[in-house]
Length: 420
Image (cartoon, rainbow, N blue to C red):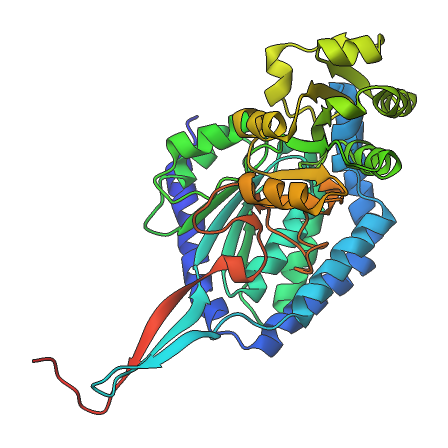
């Protein structure tokens, strides 16, 4: 029996388009009530959500997923509380819909306004992290958009449980249930069919590995904002305080290695490549980090495995770290330009001029000075949550919050003017 995915996908997209008209004109109060109701539902249904998450974790163990991937998949009481808190933070933010971005009056008396409006229908594809289900739904609702969510098969039971909380919140606030829809079909053919529906869907946001993003870009007739891989660097400069550098590097790599803003490559100025680097790599190894280093790194830390060319562009999402000793800041910046993914890169230095040079010349969506790459995050930036971290330059860049899920239209008011 052949499944007609094209017809099913179009039906879902049509429902989303219809729902988007209601959400686009919903009051701020109504949207906030929906967000609060979803947050309450998460708290009330926490036990059921964790039970479904346990089914996903059991399948992950049998499939042999890495510890970092299992960590991304796991829902604890604290993480459920964090999701609920994120929704309340989104509700507390100013509503972007209807905001006047700029205003002017033309010599002929026409009054021009550029006003924020929702994008419309957004199709979000993501892997393994079930919290994205809540974050994406909340951000889309507050920004007046309908959304279609397609999570990875690893989190199928968790996502379904979270979706039930979302639907109950929508109903409680009097918004259409179809303002948020979850794709339950596991077949990639369904996604392929959805990616052709540019008549009904306005934007696609893929969050996941490089293969997923490339596949979406190749297939989609809908505009795509790419949330590309996070090959994040920390550069320890000649003038860095070794203690500060070690603390930042350990946090950037070890706090949560399975996330996109974790450090994947450490660059170290040759002046720091003696005892400071050796002590840092010993501390990394003590935390279970496998070191893959250049020749000078291996000379300082013999337990390191020689790095291959592929290591410099790898997003490990695991306790693996590529380390290179560089001659100067110029070499560090050149390395980032060649191998980086324009996600997040950091410098540790006590020299303001070096910091400014790094900030000016490194072309990434977030550039950090004396801070961990782990701060590249919607919540840490005060956005409440994020739909992802865009490594594109159009239409949004970096952590995407509610304003990044809007576009604008011109509103022109006159008193009878005609063009001659």
